Amino acid sequence: MARRAAGGGGTAVKAARRPEVRLPSLEPYGGGELEPDGDYDGLEFRGTDFAGQDAAGARFMDCALTACALDETSLRRVRLLDSVLTGLRGVGTDLAEATLRDVELVDARLGGTQLHGAALERVLIRGGKIDYLNLRRARLKDVVFEGCVLVEPDFGGARLERVAFVDCAVKEADFSAAACTDVDLRGAAPLEIARGVDRLAGAVISPAQLLDLAPVLAAELGVRVLAEQ
Image (tube, rainbow, N blue to C red; front, side, top):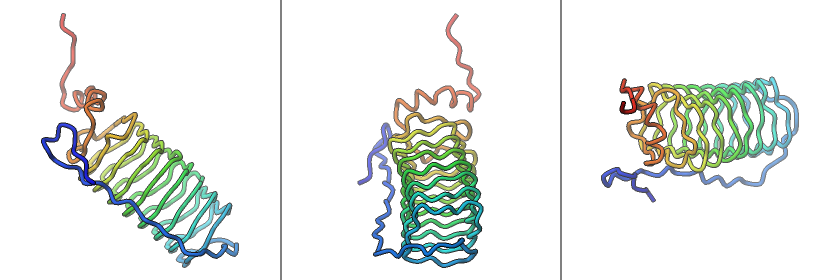
């Protein structure tokens, strides 16, 4: 159900639609390296090290990836559909221009993940920590960040529609040139915005967050805040 924005004059916030992934019986992955433009359907990848491999343009549908390593793995333009990714770890994973639809990403430990130009729809990112997530010019629709830590996420030029932050930490985020529609930031604590606070039209924050962001907003407006003499 949509919740009412604090101080929003009766304007409701449209809630993000969460993915409902129901995996079929899965076959264990037979091993070997991933292949560019490969087709992976109904497979379980468990504890597999994909570091440095190239699976650009591949399709993963009805798959489960659990405790896999993705250091410097190329997954450019990959399609991840109706899949659950649990306990992934890696630095420099390249998911540029990827498509994620009806995907759950749970307890990931990732750094420098490239998702610029990607399309995310009905995606749940729950738990874990992601450092330096690059979502520049990405399209996010019905995306929920829940119980996770995002360190310096980059939403520059991204389009966010029905995106919610629930019980998560957002540190030094960049919203430069972003476009927000029904973006609910009230569940982010802390909520730290390094750049692009002027692009939050269409987002909802709490009264407490407004006070926390007051110095950033004042700086953006060119307002000097001085105590009385």
